[in-house]
Length: 381
Image (tube, rainbow, N blue to C red):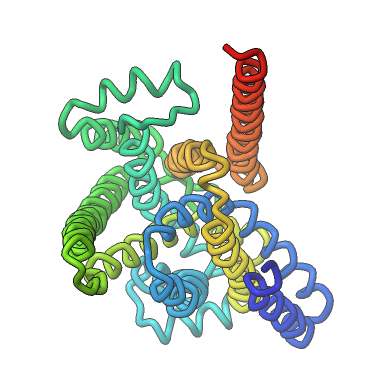
């Protein structure tokens, strides 16, 4: 199971490290290895959230996520995205931006750093909306009940998450963005840039999330109708009809996953510049890490880990909320990537430990109930 799920990740790791040695020797090998570990540590919460969405999709779309999706993740976010940032922020063509990335790495890093406020605002708002919509939803299973119960009651207020997100964006643009850090130690007023980028992130979330939710509801309605038709056919002795899945639903869920993955990738891409400004090494290291995130996502789905450890999804969404706030704070202040990665690891580890404790408590309660029942039967009660 492990080899089947992580086989491609192992192969890509070997090829990537060998390519790094040929490209820049053992120094490049070490940089790529560090970047891979950085990407995995920063994106573990991404895998947990992805698994929660991916388990609703068919095996076909899971394969699409692992094939076309990984091409988008590796080549789109880890290679093309940094070049697009430079091309847009510096008003230059993509070919010129690629040439700059390969020939003038210091200037390339400077341009990416200067574009960080807009990237952080877009990604921060998108991730913040995911966290707010999760925390304001009334769920049967609650991890931190003392916090989640009152928030679920507040969640009955229409558009509350959007209002809070906009307030956070406004505060960020009026505080962090007015003295956003620029390359070379200078500061500039980025309030307008942050506002526009943040609103763009909010709109992107609402469009993609709204479409995926709409088609997911349509899919559930279609499955319910098919289930009723099957039951009717079974009662009448007729052959059952095959369940027809709505392709649009799966497509928009896939699109939502890709945008979500892109938002999670912002911190990894930006954080990579703290280690190297070589676009080739960056693509190799982050690409290897992205493969493991994909494989881990599928592993969680196939093993049913989220069903066994019910608080994992909660921990991942709390990590999303923390990452969203970190991204907004980094508009002005630098935060070490180790801290960013450890926040997610600690929250998910805590939720896993809580899930284990819950499972043990339930098992103990069931064992006690079975023992009491046997005692009653043996005593003739």
